[in-house]
Amino acid sequence: MFAHETILHRLRHGCQTMAYPDGPAPALPDRHGGSLRLDATKCAEGCGECVRVCPTEAIAQPPGHPVALDLGRCIFCSECVAVCPTKAIAQTGDHRMAARRRDDLVIGGPGEEQVRLAAALDEKLRKLFGRSLRLRQVSAGGCNACEADTNVLGTIGWDLGRFGIQFVASPRHADGLLITGPVSRNMELALRKTYAAVPEPKLVIAVGACAIAGGPFVGNPQVRNGAGEIVPVNLFIPGCPPHPLTILDGLLRLFGGLDRSLDRR
Ligand code: SF4
Ligand code: SF4
Image (cartoon, rainbow, N blue to C red; front, side, top):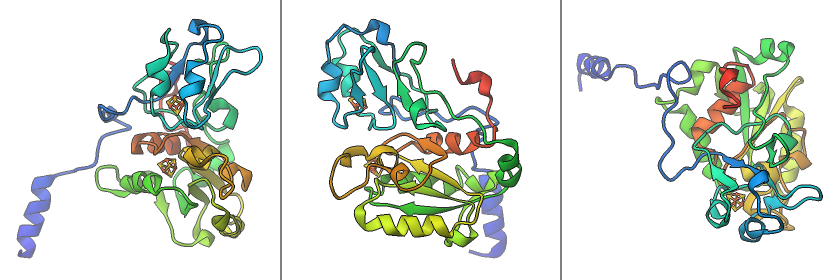
């Protein structure tokens, strides 16, 4: 192909990058039910059907509450939604799930039917990282689906670079880590060293059920149950794997770049 044909080809294609977040968010695929909502007031007392079917022990019946669901442990299999006789647990179709605190992912308490979404970083960190954030990715023993959906953000359709966020090879050039996987024993030392090599101040982002709480590997002696056991985590992004939209939403939330009036709809 001649150079002028290449240029014409590019011009005909126009801009392929989605308008989000200035325009509407792309729809989740039909099979993706989005986040979960738990209305414990509808819960049939002592039923426990959801607790029995959950493969990752994400649902419990703590003292004083009919039921509590930890989105950080959830792999979004929807088994609990299917078995709940009172429809207390429902899919929301909402891609937004990222939280700053681990406790904010636990839903079902009074007034806490849904995840408490991540607040922005304080002003000093926003000024430091808001226009340029370099992340080193650490793959710490998962199945690689979380990495695949993180990689999607680098494609032309998502163009993560337009927000000033890029992945770098060296932790010494990074402002933080994006960790996937439950942290296998073999990766524990590597994660500690990589974290230590990132200059202060630094951020840690745990992506996926494994990195948050061990995911499907929870309790296995060959893994730690999530990155939080090794390093302090600033942002938790649930999913197994999280949809790229959920990851992007979480990253942008750190800088307050999203309309928070929509957060508790
Ligand atoms: S959707 Fe989540 S909470 Fe419900 S059964 Fe599956 S893993 Fe457990
Ligand atoms: S959270 Fe799920 S998709 Fe991500 S690494 Fe673990 S098993 Fe794989």
